Image (tube, rainbow, N blue to C red; front, side, top):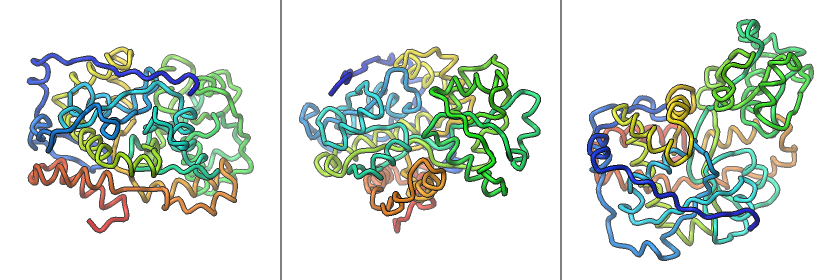
Length: 382
């Protein structure tokens, strides 16, 4: 596949760092408020059986574009050795979202999972590609900006009547922001949509006065600090827990590599527990910065200083809701309603992985709260 380069990133933490960091558990948005004091992530147990890590069925190829940070749990699971402990080999592949989705939907061997984005995957699905969501990566993570002296004015959503709004096409920020404007009674037809070709150009349009407001990702807000704009809303303030990046694969790959997908998710859940423990913050920042090539200052702000909420929960109910909002926004045509998006969701991998960890550690409060959250956001009888 064109421009597809497989790379296995192997940066090792020192033994001393791991010993000092592997303690307790903490909080994360979609779990409500995970409690501290559960057993250390490092004590979650080893793989239940010996497997051939070089076997095709035990290898997961995960799309991780250079510099990507939102998939921090997968980075941590790799660098902390959890994948090896759980009996799965994971190779990171530097590929664009479109290339990854094309490879996955045609069941090519060089990519199994795309861990970022949701609108492109839903677009592929609506156009007939055989894809499935099996887990989450993030919720929330977008913002609305304006001129610095207009932020309070636009916190009243009814003042969006007649504005010029800058955005990139296919962004969750507009899909969910639009739904809240409709709820507030705004006539969307009065809004002049200014589509630009990059997130930074959303900022530039607002900074130059070419647009009244802009819809964009939180990482762009972070990277554009110092330019002439102000934050109106982190969209999570008005749409708590709204859907963002999901993990996407194909039904064929899930079937052929079922056990590897479960072990992959078990390792990622352990990484989530490690991440959620505030005592591990410095170790998390160090690992992710080293792997991504970003500065530690940027990583710390990205993961802990802005409202990017990482989660592995599939959030079946959120996917169904978001798909409707996506069609309402006009990004997908009305004909897309013929697809029952519920048929493109498989929660069984996440559920099996979570049950595996609860069987190992039935008193682990972090995993117990993940189970409570899972019951809330998914249609399940567990």
